[in-house]
Image (tube, rainbow, N blue to C red; front, side, top):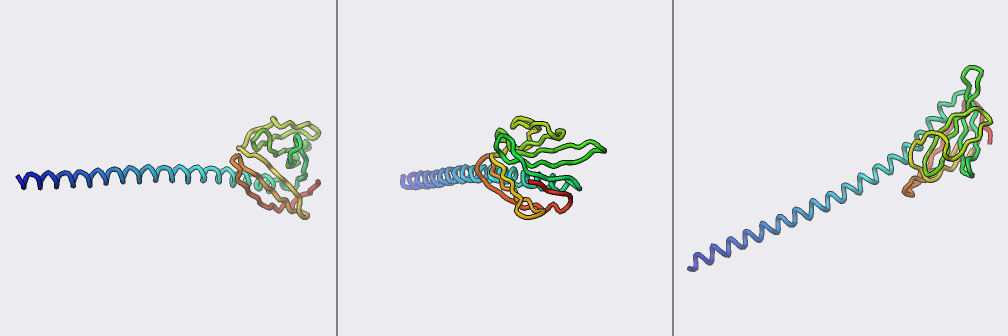
Length: 161
């Protein structure tokens, strides 16, 4: 009889230990998946922010020999890059409209609206400032409130405010 009780208590202890191991494992997996989701979300947000800055930087650098000026679209800062295709002039406007970084290419003198152009990525605000001759300061706020800034040197061509 005592042997049967001993086997039963050993079985219950082993079963309880196994259940504790399973519950701990499940909690660890759930915690790990939540951490992974948070890290992944933050990486996506940082990617969007950095990509927006790199996009604007490359557009300024591609403006070889053209004119760079600052303007506004519906009260928001806009970067205007003027380039020539043969004898025809074009203006590429980069601005933030309706929560999106946008780009539109128009002929000089064409009015640009916040809904015009191609949507590049989500962006809350875009602030542009010529801080020194040949130096453009770009500050952005992402769709989730994260902020970033960069300075771009554009020694080629001219700049106007």
